Length: 245
Ligand SMILES: Nc1ncnc2c1ncn2[C@@H]1O[C@H](COP(=O)(O)OP(=O)(O)O)[C@@H](O)[C@H]1O
Ligand SMILES: Nc1ccn([C@H]2C[C@H](O)[C@@H](COP(=O)(O)OP(=O)(O)O)O2)c(=O)n1
Image (cartoon, rainbow, N blue to C red):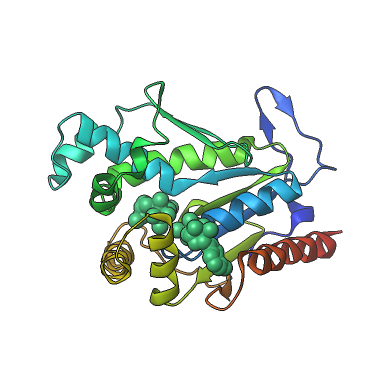
């Protein structure tokens, strides 16, 4: 079970001690592609005054760096050797999340088809995961009011003591339709195949695969509107906070 909010020790960051009367809430949201993790997490964080971290953007950023630096992403040893090199910085304001690599804004380049096609290979390399997991834990520990962190292994590996863990699911058809809707003119069945292939790679890798934590609440978003999913998560956070009082 996640640690009760009332038991959370005071966190210190940037030389500042956060009072233990303030209980930063840590929310982990995991699930496959297109289930609504990013949209839900940003909206929940904004509504509750929490920070927000898109961990997929970090894996995309390191993948983009590998591509632009001529590293063969199929060569796991080469990727491992380079894993510590790029400086990846995430801005955690849900109203304006940012990501830079070596000081360069990477928010556009990390969304290309090439990065999407290569990110699973890079994120399967253990040295990459160790590096990025370390960044994620530091960011979560420094969030003054708490944070919503979304990804694939947040509840299982990155933040196993999160106060609330959500695992979002949706049918492949719904997820493909949502993704194709974002990529103007994309073919839904090709999008569906690409998405299923990436989910399979992310779920079957040895290092910290996509998985539902035993204590996560599963929410099937297939028939829900985004607003309903947001309300569901906000309610679950409120219940956790009330139980911790
Ligand atoms: N419950 C929902 N119903 C319909 N569309 C949704 C829902 N949740 C998210 N979307 C849309 O689906 C797309 C993918 O959502 P996103 O949050 O990026 O998913 P993920 O982060 O899990 O890949 C976005 O365009 C988003 O607006
Ligand atoms: N915690 C995480 C988050 C993402 N990843 C990897 C696996 C995913 O296919 C890629 C991209 O994640 P992202 O959340 O941007 O993917 P979507 O296209 O939004 O579904 O990163 C991961 O291995 N662990």
